[in-house]
Image 1: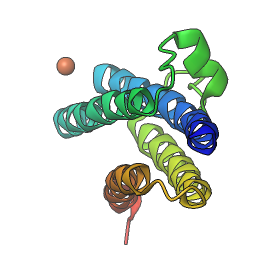
Image 2: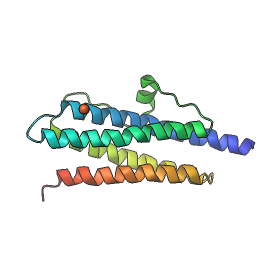
Image 3: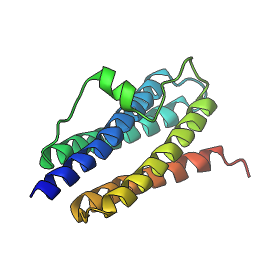
Image 4: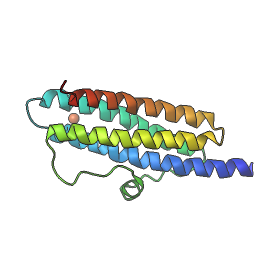
Length: 153
Ligand SMILES: [Fe+2]
C-alpha cells in the first residue's frame, strides 16, 4: 500500500506537468482562433476551434486522472505557467507562424508524453499508460495535420 502511494504521487507529479503543458497549449490555440487574420481566416478559425475543443476535454481528463490517483489538480494560471513545457508567444503572429509554433509545441508535448509513458511503465499503472497513449495519439494526429499545412510540395 505504501509502495502504491509513493508510485501514485510520482505519477501525479508527471501528470501535473502534462496538465500544465496541455493548458498553455489549449490557451494558445484559443488565442489563434480569436486572432487569426488573412485569406484563410475561415478555415483556420474553424480548425483552431475544433482543436481547442479536443484539448479542452484532454485537460479535464488529465486533471480527473490526477484526482483518481489521489493527487491535487492545481488549476491556477500561475502553476500552469511555471510547470508548462510550452511557452506563451511574446508577440502577435501571422497565420503561417501560428501553424509553425503549434507544430513545434505539439512536437514538445509528444516528447513529454512519450517520456511520461516510459516512466509510468515502471509502476505497471496500465490505466494511466493507456490514457496517456490516447492523448499522445491526439497530438500525433494534430502534428500530421499541421505539418501537412506547412508542406508546400
Ligand atoms: Fe469562437
